[in-house]
Image (cartoon, rainbow, N blue to C red):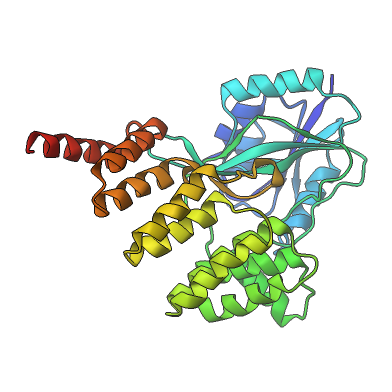
Length: 359
């Protein structure tokens, strides 16, 4: 059976740290907490779970702090979590079973990371992350922001989701501030850093700068395919904001140069044509979304609704506006199969029922 060192970096996490550690403590053989400057009760709470608590001065570099934490782990595998992450009891049991069954030749264990949820608590946005790495094998984080451990060797995919359950907003300016400082200092941006810099600029509505950065990213040879696909969607957002609808459509179609259509892009195209009352084109793209490849294990960001509920409910709207009530109802029922408690589905269902009574 393998052993696991949980290695975490924290700062001012008194509200959530206990919740995280309560969820993982029965599966971790060792807990390492690295504090980067807390002024609340974070370290006091951590001390209830471990005496392996260290201080590390914050230098606007997540990888530096995380790698220091990894260096303090002594077990077979190193695992990372954020303080506002949790693992359900059901999935903790799966993790314990994995400890028994994982063969020692595995270098990296990838697990789903659920980072957004609907009103019922169901995951709506997730992607795989490298969650466990073999100790003493040269694994380390890279990137000052949006840090990552580049997977290598034998990789195992485990269906053990980690849920990112934020309780308070973070520092929304921090990531952009770090990237801007890197740019001012003349630091070298690799493809990943350039991509995430562009995303931060879009988030902060700096659309012209984001357009320049993401276009530069697409021209780089070291850009990852999934990031390039997502970059075209972000560039479309920029173009819409800059009142260039034709360019936005161009960017969305550019995604198909990198791989077969993803549901997210197809839904964006469906919305583009729906907003312009071009319903036949909209129907085509939403139909493609229902059939699209969900690149779950590629590490892509997966918006679950784009592969079921969203195209179905949108097809209902399109067909209703085209005067095809029968097909509109069919797609509303399909949407209901994905989300039977959705108010959109239920309102449509009521509308169709009342309309039939009035015939």
